[in-house]
Length: 248
Image 1 (cartoon, rainbow, N blue to C red):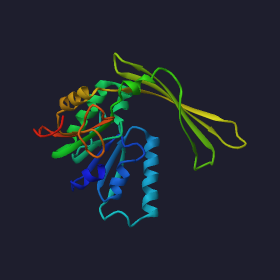
Image 2: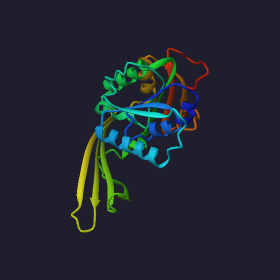
Image 3: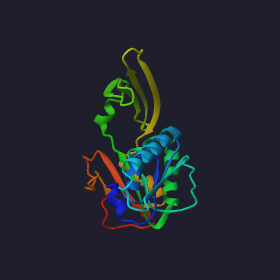
Image 4: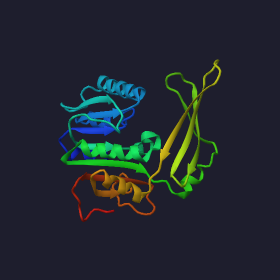
């Protein structure tokens, strides 16, 4: 989906909360001029290493002109001093911005609008949990996966527990990674995240309050229309332009 959206534009691309490069690196590989922004230095280091590795292994896979610039900054206060034809906030990043503070989520969306060219498009992609999804956010511990660490050959198990507050639609999520390697004592790494889950109506209201007008509202990466059974929402929006035929 992101590659298709990018191919419709010849201009520069900005990804907010780019993390380790899951979106911005393939876009740069496809020949686009991409800027990725994230507040987490460790994630940016991973993205830079992945980009360097990609260029080393397959130097001829990117058409001439493909580039990736990584910037460490808070997306709620970002000011790059330039505008982009495509601005992306993908893969649930909106939910964790500002530790789930809805005011800071609003600020990030306004920054999307301020970095968008008059004819550009913004893409917001986020999960829409239903009551069944949030029912397990009651403190129970859920083991999500066990994988082999390619760096050490050891096993890593991920588990998580969460508490959801219906009144504020905020959740506190505790995630644990338990690693074990032959001949070494097990080690646990933990993190806590605060997440805000806006409803579909709230999200569209936030987008419009940021000065963005939805052009298309989809329920999956194939851009099928959003409906009551959709597990996520993908909004393609522009600055101050409405499309009477867009699905809302």
